[in-house]
Image 1: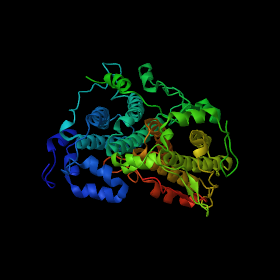
Image 2: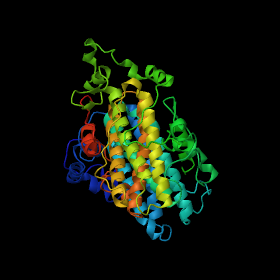
Image 3: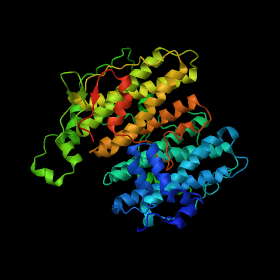
Image 4: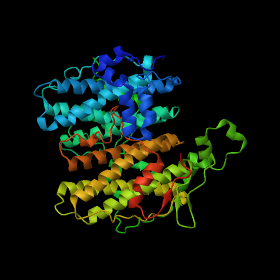
Amino acid sequence: MTDATQSPAPGILDDIDPDLGERLSRREVLFASAKRFGPAATIPVLLAGCAAVKTVVTPLPQQVKDVLNFALTLEYLEDEYYRTALAQPNLIPAQWRPTFEQISAHETAHVAALVAALDVDAIAKPQFDFTAGGRFGDVFSNFNTFAALSQAFEDTGVRAYKGQAPNLMLDPNSLTTALQIHSVEARHAAQVRLVRGVLPWISGSSRTGLPAAAQAVYAGEGQTVQLGIDNARFVGAADASEAYDEPLSKQQVLDIAGLFLA
Amino acid sequence: MFRTTSRSTSSAPASASRRGFLRGSTLGVLGTATGVMLHDLTLTQAMAQTASGPTVSADGVVDLGGGDTGVLNYAYALEQLEAAYYTQVVDNPYSGMTRTERDILADLRDHEIAHRETFRVALGENRIPDLQVDFSAVDFSSRQSVLTTARTFEDLGVAAYNGGGAAIQSPDILVLAGKIVSVEARHAATIRTLLNPGSADFAGDDVVNLLGLDQALPPSEVLAAAAPFIATRVSANQLP
């Protein structure tokens, strides 16, 4: 943490994406980004890039580190999933390549942002088995299977970040950054659902044709009562459930993600 | 199904559950702060604990109030705007609106009405008045005009909730905001795909930066962006 101009932790970042360590080591990129998105982007951008630019920051509370490493596990999973898929020559139809290239770029950036924020406390990338022990054996050869798992990962990611938000209140910068990732995951989720030809929002606890193993992703989504107020009296039960994405607990998320750990 | 036809947002009756909520939340801490306590509080915390409710000035400017009451009124203002907009869109379909588009826009209307009504009931007596909207810049017969405005509202909603989250004092209200913002993001992605199918616009580089982060804007910037669509003048002088 002494030199603001040297390349940062190149080993860590290069493991994720050969280009990314270089990209994030360049202060001008970070500051151009901050300028482009206005002053409000500066704090989270600098937070996410802090290790990359060797900014000295106050150590994060352990509770915040735990949440960020939990998020990092999910981002590692998503990042490897999309990079593997995009490398298959005949998996993703041409009309949907822009969709999945954009999603993949964001997941790679999320990994880098979390690794940068956690610095030496970042966990290593786990080994993944996206077939879940053979259950989804054609995940990288059948687009329908690939898109179905993509939806499950994105909807899970939305619910996972949401569930951890209260645990980040100790550190407002981390909370804001997590919220900024959370809404991007929700954009991804909606788009993947549109690609699959289903509603972009979660209605009731419907798993929209996903395999039964994915039902845990939608557990409790049919909730219509918020702050003790039943929204079904305003708009009916279906819209009342769609209008809110419900959180998942850390354990619920780990149970889902655990299917894909090698 | 709940429908509004007025351009102004409608009123809901008071309820017992609202009062229960107020007692059980951090809104209940209003008025408990003393000058002595300020030594150990951050400015934000102090503002939350000494926060006043919303006000309307002599010349008609509505201030949202401070603390979590102010944040809730901020969200309530934006949801009033969105609900009024989609109500008008669905009641005056643009030429060539497909069945799918109609269903999506009706869902958006109903989601925003649900959000608006929840904030209305949760805030109870601490809510701001119904806002008067101004959609004179929108050509409701034009698909492009309607969807482009919708995109502005949804992206702005996402940026507002993201930027406002860190100011929230109550975990329950933070979770509620989290439950809503991801649905606003789903709306934004959907509208963007209606405007440019198959593109990367659903999470375009105009709203998601190089670090994969969506926008987060403070109330002052959000209200300035929304001001052309709200006839009532709104200030957030007691919010960070």
